[in-house]
Image (tube, rainbow, N blue to C red; front, side):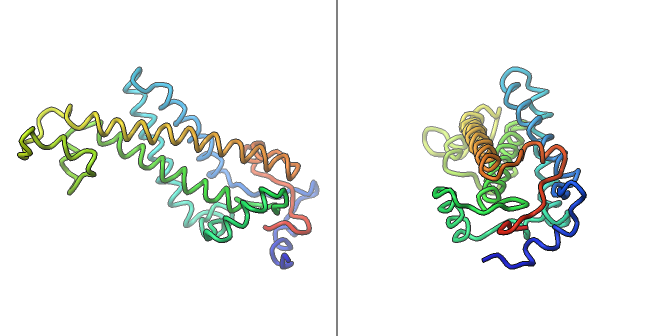
Length: 223
């Protein structure tokens, strides 16, 4: 049963239209900026490398900003507000499967898990792209995963000096492209979740990420 405190405070801030501000301007700029930057990076891969790299650095900068804003931003931007444990997340997914999940004013537990998955995958994609941009950067790492290790040894297993960067580009590129493809899958799942939640709770969640406003909490909603 929902405690009254879960929705009374936000409800008190609702305007005459019954809507309240949930997503602050910086969260909205981050969200749509990330969509544009990742789409640009994807479309320019292997075609317009300078544009691809700028888009990749933009993604990295936006992710770094979101990590900071998740600690010091407004109520609904903070990780502490929306991140839930595995048990609560699984329970929410079970309620979704039965069509009885509750409405969350901010991120619901499944959406929160998706936020984490997207940020981690984007970080890995940006990091591997950064490594590929300058071969010398690989040498800065104290140890590389096994998939990259063969690039540092000759056929007899002897360690050799890093020469041209071609030796590590293959494995790193595979990891980079795998993470980028995983991002597409996660993005598709995210869009599907947004469409489902919009239908179930009778509100346009994509529009809310443009205006910042959502319908105020009702009985049973979690704010």
